[in-house]
Image (tube, rainbow, N blue to C red; front, side, top):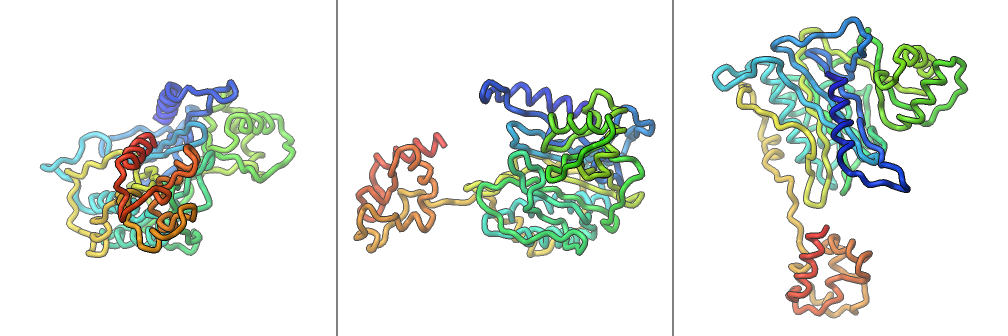
Length: 391
């Protein structure tokens, strides 16, 4: 399944955006290797074909599929939790603690998106997620972080923690316009503590700030391949033609910290772990979720609900109503100000949409057009409408 997921991503990305830069095709493909984590296995499970202990899926297993793709360094990620085999229905619903975990993860996802507004902080999101988990009687998984995405950077410095954990502290930061985040929500019926599996990791990433002169031939082969094909993004050992040589070379690279491993993480046996991951863009119109699978909750019945404070957040709209430039009323002081002066309304933010027009058409600002209290010129309205449509 992991191999199939990567092949689908490579196939789909190869067929879009065929533009070339300096005669070379734009880079595209897998941003994070496909992972299939089953039941109490939480993340980073990407077995190789040579592994002897490959797991077969059974009816009732809870599977977490985690994928990521990129084009020209701009990436998006997604993960979803599925139940193998017969699905819960209204007549035969998912109930008990399993329903609580599923609902908690879904509601926490909705709350996180609602709060990712410019000016809010990551601490607000963390606290809200913790309140959702408390309401449903489940636990957030410690150590899971949601990172800011940048070009060729899948784990930016800005991060959102699932809970306030002393071992995984993150700096408080404010969300800003035009940022992108990989939001990772993981809930567990257990205590939320993870441990590394005995199985060796198969996903790694280049540590760009480290250097060392490798001794082994296999190590040099692997490291050269990584620098050429995966200089910034995570990769799996399955990507190399000689898997055996790659396994040999990875040891020395890890020893000297040239590569970072993504260990396979597990909760306690029997714990029910649900994951939803999606990509969020903080746009002028509001935070927008651009990836992820719609969660069907018709067959999920939990007897628990969130408190009034969380309901207030859920009732918020993610869409932001913006004052368009031609509907902003000018004050008397603005009317008397010289035409070449800085637009006072611009300082208030009403002209943010028109800022981009300046680079295209020169000094264009509604403040430089005649006004009689409102921007009533049909010519101005038509011009702005066309520009907004093109944007």
